[in-house]
Length: 147
Image (cartoon, rainbow, N blue to C red; front, top):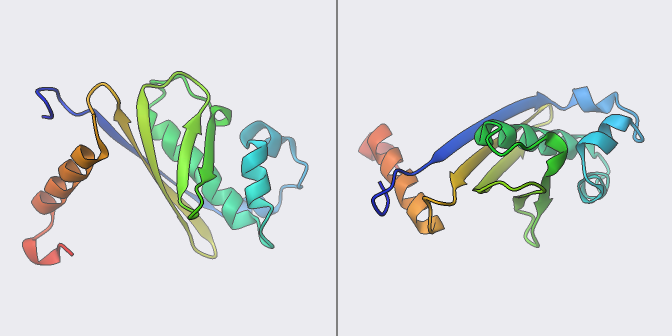
């Protein structure tokens, strides 16, 4: 409980094979339907854009799962951008009363994403989320495993 209200958090995750995207042509309608111009510019700015395309797609899927369609988002409404330090963040183009946090990673063969959606009516600060996550980790992991 935070400030007398239950905290409404949801997690979504997704994993995809990078090779799945290598077979798509650069001008594919899939890219135009799924990714924004900013996302495509970021991904195709790399000599091998496919890990970046795959992880961005996985991020969008994770956001959809975390919001559980409560926001009425479609994959094209979700935009995953990077800040000046390269950290990913989510914007969306629908009324969605959630703050969404995302973590992205990829290997040479797979891309994975985890999204956390926190309903804004219950969460007033990131510190509250961090405290709740730390408390949960302490309950799950033996004391010696916390780093």
